[in-house]
Image (tube, rainbow, N blue to C red; front, side):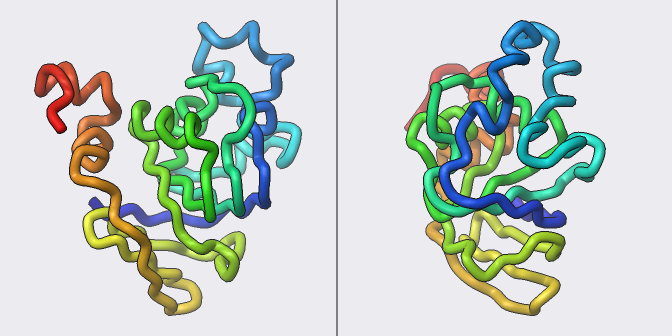
Length: 165
């Protein structure tokens, strides 16, 4: 699986409230409307600025806070294909994979906003196409790649039955 997109850079400790502010909780059953508010308090009109397939790059502890599945789901529905971070909050990381959003742990310190990235999930290779620099990360386990290939855990189970590890 190869992902390509433009970088949107965020710092450390991005919480689920940064992703979807709590004041929009009432929209949780209206995902089309809710996705319009993704990262609204950090980047006004973020939803209007991103392109399909763009990639979020962040620092440490991305997704801390509540265990809302809506946070990674809304990122995916808004058009983001992957999040690359130095580290993730554990529950956010698992929720991201479960909804079909690639979550990659990799050193992001030298990646700049606006750069074009290519991510090879099977190989564990990241190429900053703007700078011409390649780096490696630990490839996602095969079962996680299969879940992503099926669009998330729900799609995987519908196609393959129970999770086979």
